[in-house]
Amino acid sequence: MKKIKVAIMGLGTVGGGTYEVLTRNRDVIASGYGVDAEVVKVLDRSEDVLVSRGVPAEKFAGNIDEIIKDDDISVVVETMGGLEPAGTFIIKALKSGKSVVTANKELLAKRFDELEEAAKEGGAGLYFEASCVGGVPVIRTLTDSMQANRITEIMGIINGTTNYILTKMSEDGLTYAAALKEAQKLGYAEFDPTADVEGFDAAYKLSILASLAFHTRIPLSGIYREGISKVTPKDIAVGRSMGYTLKLLAIGRKNADGSAEARVHPAFVPESHPLSSVRGAFNAVFLKGDFVDEIMLYGRGAGAHPTASAIVSDIIYCADREEPLRLDFKNGEASLADDFSSEYYLSLTVADKPGILASITKVFGDCGISIGKMQQQVSAAGQAEIIILTHTTKESAVRTATERLESLGGVKKLNTTLRVIK
Image (cartoon, rainbow, N blue to C red; front, side, top):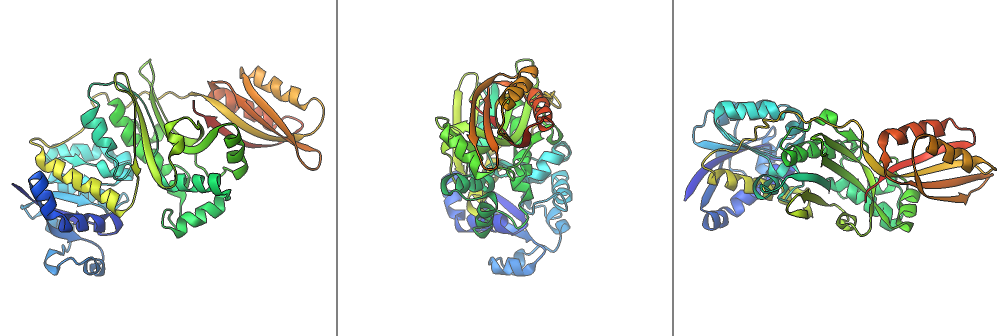
């Protein structure tokens, strides 16, 4: 029986869930996996929080140094979130030789190299299964189960808040604002939802997951990011009439020339694709390897218990390893492609007059874009709405075309531009 002493920093939703799992299921973990994990110290800014969670007073830690100086503690769990003081505390723990388990995707995405260097200096391990997709074991799959493959693509719905909002807009016809309000009421969205709805959260996770998938650092700064705040129920309804479901996707691809692409944006997915059926606050990650071909992982991407489950799994994983886990990306940063290809959906409001369609198609032709489908619906006051689906083309070509369309006589408004995944 391996006995390990654990400290938890931050006893909010996730930290509280972790404490609950480790105390309630301590005997289950010990009998099933031969690891007796005992929480001996808990650090939080508020002692009232510790009391409300049922933490005995003798386990209260007054500061980070009290944890660092305790030689019996071998694993430190960080569930504080944010860059600071979490970053400083983690680095102190790692340099002191204590392995760290964290769910902090923002910190990992922005300061991974610094954390790994601290782990190397202290001979400690850094574990972060809970940082991406909650209780779904996607990181363990990438690091421990896909060794036989060159992974060429990772694509997923990795933010439950946005998936819930888009599901409500699609199935119930809610506006973005109404769906967001409902998500906030249920606790899926924060009071300030920017990190979720503008794609920052998904970009943090994609930086981590694509780096693991491609064995090279995918810097956060190189990820194209676009959120869902401009999506309308009408766009979703038109897409559904064409056989598509709208999702906020995180996409990483390894190109044949060795470069990579990484992007987060809303996209239409064919109803036949496995990701189209992922509803509500659930998450899913779709992987493609050269030998395993296609697999998909699915489950709850957030919440106290799913995330705590992943944290405790990492604690057991850490205890079972003879050598601490560290991920040294010897290939350095990836060469990120500055352009990518997709099919596109565009919605335009135009003057309902002769020659306007010819002018629009000429813009597309001049930009080298082939139109796959076009439909026009007459609206009020002498205006019409035109929906265009393109064949596969370059992002740069579409950007050039949209700039020209916005200044084209007769085009009242370029309403929406969305990518289409095949």
